[in-house]
Length: 353
Image (cartoon, rainbow, N blue to C red):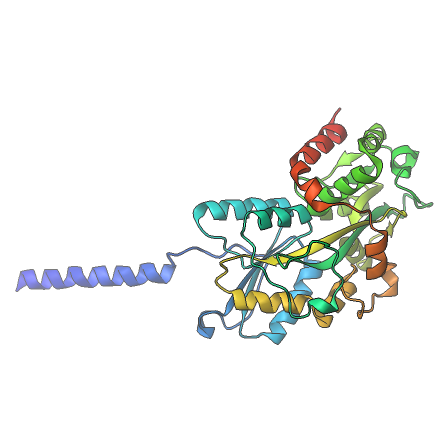
């Protein structure tokens, strides 16, 4: 009898332990996120999740997510916002472990999307509203779709600069920018990398040598260089439109000016092949390109991909048509093989003593 009781107790302990371990979660964990959906979670059942990796800052992505959740309250949305370089490193690590945890990726480093396409990890999906948007990709095949036409200009601290620059060369020659102009690290920021590639295409590496001679600095992320300009640590920086405009709206003494050679960087969105939530991912891409979501894009201070959206006049942004027409032209497949070389050469020039 005593042996039977002991055996029963041991069995009970084993069952209890198994239940507790299952409750703690033994499978792959979802990524840490800077925001999460308020959907019904596990109670909503299978297929109720959506995980997004994006380089868009809170000023832009939070409103998009909020609008999507209102239309899809049954989908629990998690998103991680980080620099494109960090996100690509995370994706590479996840592929090594056997599974990409995200369903959707939305950044501004266009060559990354061509690379992922060539590696066969992107789902081919042409959004239901594709015919309503402007498409900057002449070789478009549905692997990824532009969700905004981001612009970058010269951000100045208006307390320090009374006469705004009118051309890119001003940053390399005028004394007010001596040791006081910053560009985000292109190894971390997709928009910074694309901007370096565009400026090199337009002016050559000699332009960066002239910037270095005038004391140009390498900053951290695309948001940090704008913050450093706002604080007065920098006089000016290369800045993303909506990041700068969100700071101005909060009272920062900044202004964003555009030389005639416009830096326009499309921000593609794509779905990962093998996504466990592919139906939800398609819903998100369709929503992101809808008039409602694109109005949120414009209201955040950046250029939408739709012509039927009103851009607030206070931002002084180009129209979507003008952004496409006047942006410096580059063939993305040609710059893709030179990405690391471009980052290395930029760092060697601007970072040298």
